[in-house]
Length: 633
Image (cartoon, rainbow, N blue to C red):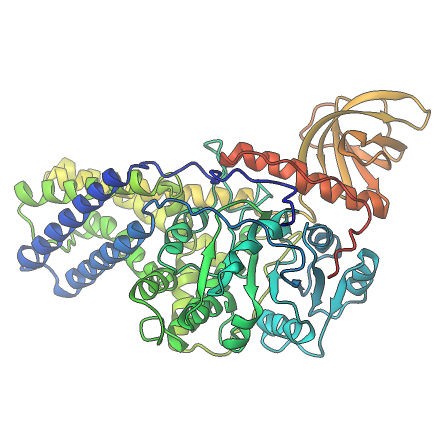
């Protein structure tokens, strides 16, 4: 007899609509055309276009083209669709002993509460631990209030990896689940994934990162589908890498076998991206990784450009540390596919040099007449135009909808300077500090992010003006000027949009406000009841619409029965900005109501929203519980 799955997930469910071309034969034919066409183009470039051009510039540009081709080969190979293997059934409740680790350092207790409550309520016997590297009394008190375990240590050696290794030493579960402090799991996560460990070769099982703060800096909803700059990694590359046995542990939302971790000496401590190094070592030791592309938990994306910059810089610097200290190209035990997958992922941050060359080339041609190609216009211009068209067409058909051309360029330009800085860690990998991605209000515009798109826009706009002047004079081939001008216009648009996006998101907030859109009632201090619409909600405030005659400072009662919370006392703060006849209320929720709110938000509201924005069918939520399940094994 096996434990029932309280939230069964359809076996065909896949977040984010399937790849644009699902037929494997058509995709393979298109991939073959891309390879043949690119090889022919590069052969022409090597043999017939390097005679009468500045040799250094031509060599740099050709190297960038070859790097693009090789990285694209790995990218498209990993995006090939594969039939999905069915998951094993949930295990018997006595089969595995599970410890859930929630590492935390300086995150607000109310943010950690959501994760701890949801983790505690997962539907398989387990123990939940707050692993507090901040040694905070309020975090210890939170653990006691919620009835979960609390672990800490005397120092912060090796940062997050050290925290997790300390937790391993204090527990003895067969399987550990790692959840970042803001990563709220679905109640069926354990029952959905534990069956994979019936195969003794499985060392870890990873799920995707899906963000619930939809208005955050990296997220985009312009096509009525949730997209962020890591979508192609989590829902494209990781899915393909799964069939190479080359997927990544990404630090959260993953189950790991304790005996496998012990076999490699625990979580890797030689990089500030301990997750990638740990999974690579597990694979090299002969264990398998399994990737399950289902939304079994949601977490916070960096809310502002400042928070985003800190997180992505850490990822890039950590990748350089791994390439220097434990390079997958030479690591014993890895297969060829695993080497290619990890070199493609970790080395992807070095593509900043390739991007820099391509961003500069059109402007250099228009302003200085500098070209890396010795060409006869009648031949070279059509060849280059066809090559560019082939690249764009293949990208559109093979990478969509996970990868987006314009938004991808926006984030590549944004991260250009930081990735260039991070690349220096290939030479000096030591001395890095693990900096937790900031949560809560983080304001400001980092110059390292804002400067590259600003300079790119100004240079490209100036180059366009110079290009038009050359066309009027007729001193360069008009077709070449048109191609370069189109690229400059594109890059200028990318830069302007990148700056606008940063300015728009420059101010953070303490806590995300969840959209709910529920009709309910409000009772004022005179005991008069009136219908209102609840628009946004979190554990400290509510925003309501369609209400008049309530004064700031007044104590009211808001009926939250549609959410399963009952009536909640609140104080009117004042008008809600941007909402007609709207009010902002400061909520005063009991401990029981806070737990019930976590259940409603992350078992009902957020999954329903994810279903609408990702194409994933909604699943039946588990019953709400205000008190602990008592799930200790």
